[in-house]
Amino acid sequence: MKTGSGGRSGKRFVVVGGGVTGCVLAERIKQRHPDSAVTLLEGSSTLGGLSVRSEPDPIGWDRFYHVVTPQDVMLIDWLRRLGVDDRLRWRGAHTGFYADETLHRFDTPLDFLRFPPLNLVDKGRLGASILYASRISDGTPLWNITASDWLRKISGDTVYRKFWEPLLRAKLGSAHQDVAATFIWSTIRRLYATRQAEGRREAFGYISGGYAPVFTAAEHYLSRLGVTVRKSAPVEHISDGPDGSTRIRTRDGSELLADRVVYTGPSRFLPKLCQEMSVPESLLTRAHQLRYLGVLCMVVKLTRAFCPYYVLNLTDPGLPFTGVIGLTTLVDPVETGGHHLVYLPRYLPDDDADFDKPDEAFVEPFLSALERIGSRRGFRRDEILLTKVFRSRFVSPIAVLGYDKLRLPIPLVPSRLYLLNTGRILGGTLNNSQMIEEAERGLDEILA
Ligand SMILES: Cc1cc2nc3c(=O)[nH]c(=O)nc-3n(C[C@H](O)[C@H](O)[C@H](O)COP(=O)(O)OP(=O)(O)OC[C@H]3O[C@@H](n4cnc5c(N)ncnc54)[C@H](O)[C@@H]3O)c2cc1C
Image (cartoon, rainbow, N blue to C red; front, side, top):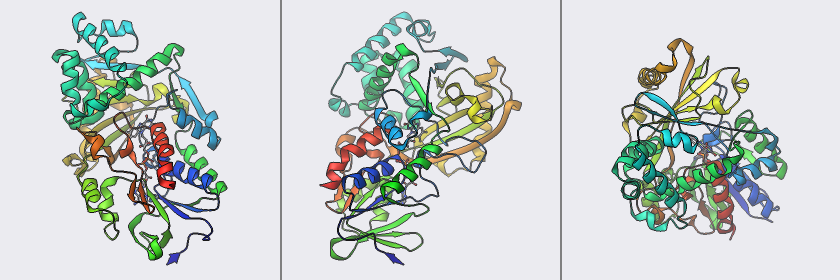
């Protein structure tokens, strides 16, 4: 079946991928070119991508955990456009460290001074290095040094081992050795800004109902704008079409012709998707070689709160997950049926053999470790109502040394095929607001 995509007075745009990036791109393209036909193709049965709700299982929240900060201005503005900004709830959230079999609070300068794994000299070095990092305004030179070398240089070996390495491992798993210093520098800057705003104490927020109502609103909003939204439409081939057009074929065999296509999924799929298209070989090789960071995340539903921290950092490298996210210390448990949710993420590179293991393989090691961490608080297994493992192998490219040069350009085939995905982020942590910013910034190139 071949379907045209609207009249020829305006251009035909196809956006592939209905996560936040694809939704914002489709919106902005339609707004800038109202007479164009804009189609959004999403492979799964709901919009939302990695922010999507966990359904139909009874976890009753997003598959992965999401926090909103006051710095997420692009996200907050998008929620306002969708008419769901009244769902934002601002709360305080606490951070802790699990070290030496004990939970330590890590919120205030006083907690920091009390933090037992570091002595006073180490604490001085750590404080000074955070201040130093937060004052660097241009992170470009930091692409040439690994985060571990740089942090050792500015904080010393002990502080690296006891503080930075556990944090890096929490965010990157076994890939933490390879990442460039830019990653940690931009993370420090983001957290530092959040802490500065925390004079108000309400520096963290969540969306009531999670991301499900946001993407329901996004679908209605896009339809009202005149964007055609097609779900359960995984794109399998992008190829050269007639008269300089581009042909998009979905799994059910439907074909669509477009003047411009924007792909927002993982770059690693590009070589297969575009094998019949004239994308420069050098770009496809680069796309193939990018190492991705993925995540395995167990959600545990509990009858009572596990600990008072939204983020519990772990210093013990032997634990099978890289952090404990106490979602319902931030999200009101009323939202999750009076139950408590803990997320146990394990970040790992896409080629890690653990991705090939079945979900059951993680249950016993994860729950034993949870028991160990919670033992002093009297945590018992019979508090567990449900567990569920979610995974995504290709979340975002690992910010390795020189990634600023390896990053793929937005135009893959100028005037025809464009790429705007999580690989745009140079350093720093992936988040929805940042992706909206990248989408807005990339529009000029896509529409040029
Ligand atoms: C563990 C974890 C924690 C996170 N925490 C936060 C947080 O606290 N705050 C925050 O703001 N963000 C957070 N995020 C990030 C957020 O969830 C999104 O991952 C991010 O914003 C990227 O959005 P995206 O639209 O670029 O990509 P994705 O969300 O990956 O969306 C891409 C979409 O493209 C679709 N697609 C791919 N290929 C095809 C194809 N061939 N055909 C059709 N469709 C296709 C996919 O199905 C998907 O829907 C977190 C992510 C993870 C994994």
